[in-house]
Length: 403
Image (cartoon, rainbow, N blue to C red; front, top):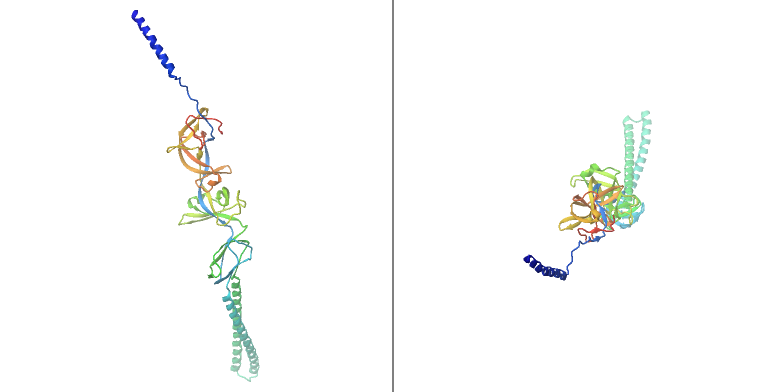
């Protein structure tokens, strides 16, 4: 009993000392930190059917474009229009030197006059021969001359008659050649076949051109324009005339628009394994800053296949090292980072209730949104916080999100 009492007396000062040390340390019991509240837009990952397109470069062409060529050889005497000038039908563009035609015409005129005089002389001789023949016929009936004398007179008349006919044929030939030269003279004046624009001039003043040489290219104004592209042969079976597809002409309008397939040239080029596709541009291109011009660069987006994809805006994707991650909005709006597996990145455009995807950057500046194909790690309908400018952390609570 005395030992037990002594131990109690010794433990009291020890407990008092421990209490004093704890009290002087100033440490308090730790409490759980509440989650940080952040604000970020929220996007839902949705699986939907999309139309995957392949992009091909295209060129704007006039539906009625004519290359003017020369039918005569000669030097370009004068040029009266410059490239880009607006032309009206019949307007003179250039003139080719026609001195050679003039000299040929003068020679034909001289030949025609000579032949005409010879024919007149032969006509006079033939008339005399006919009179002589008739006289010999009467004398033969009276047995004054012999049959041989009459035959000679008849033969002389018939010979002169044939010579008159030959001279008349020569005169007609010279007249025809003169008409041909007159027609060729018209080709020395190169004029616009319709109202249009001088798109290209191949020769300048003083240049010598030969028959068949191209001189100028004229595009009809107001005649409509087309987008022409060389498309891979594997897509030939999926296209038809009158089908609507997407296209873009960046210099004309930044956003993609719908065009109609106007022609499919089914012959495949064996070198490039492509065929020619033409699409009619609409009369009024949405958002166009001006009228289309032949030669403008564009792109056509040809549908390749329809598939279902789980798409997520690229802005919702973050990278932790080399791993793509997303901030999934969980229970009570708490953010949880999750690693996902992604596929290709697309640009999307919506028309007629369909979503068209392409990997082309042709209309990137038009505000086309980039989408990532999520292959795994994310379920259809899950919400993801998307704010590339914010620093989101695991366990943050979403407040005031745009849901």
